[in-house]
Length: 310
Image (cartoon, rainbow, N blue to C red; front, top):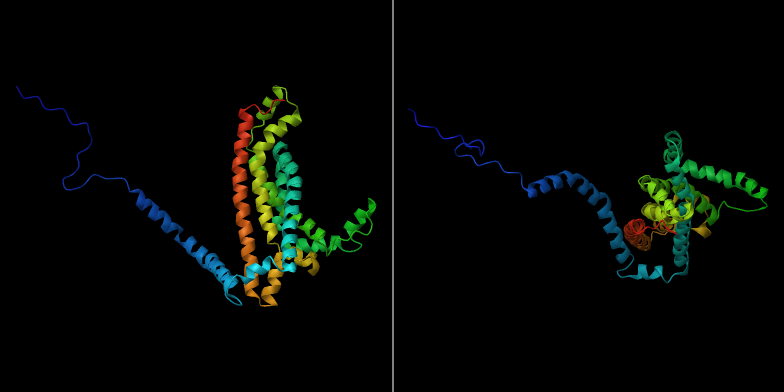
């Protein structure tokens, strides 16, 4: 009788002689492929951003003579100090006002029906579809002497209020321009908050206001911080609105940079002002990132600890 045959191997198909088994592509090769895909963007970023920025920094230390004189003048020249202080103050006022106006609007967007929410989103996006110059010229017409704004203010007893050519008028226009940059980050965070947490807080005995303050507000803090940092950074470098609606006596830092480069040919001083704005921007972004992270953590802690209680 024939001899029994051995059962077939179950380890897998046989590998042909002389060929190594297939191995997964190494991680180093995948990283190299990713860097190759990023290479065009990195080259464009280096040519159009990094190199000009390095040139500005070098000019700030070498023009008109080597040293740190341009930076010392930022904190010793009275006019420059006033401009820096005015710019930071206006940016802060615009940021705070934008938060106060955008928060209830973004909150109502989370409560509205889909149709109403679509209309509200469209209203927010309309400024993006309108030319910056057109909006500023519209504000010039509204704020001019005898214009619509003065007429409305006179109805409430504020006669003779002048906005065109003042820092107040510039701030009002900047708030209108930058408000969408505050609403959208807030809404993106608020729509992810589970509203059942508010109901849970109220079921534990908290009032609606207390539940909102201790549960919803901490959870929405990352959106507030993100929007506030974006608006503050954009407000620091505004040029068109202050140039059209402001005055030389109330100039902001972007106007001073333009005058120094175009009329005075003071590229070193203008570069020092630009580097100062860059440093303030980096500090603001670093602080906002830390606040956003701590805000999210504190919001979760409030909820976990029963923050909806009395």
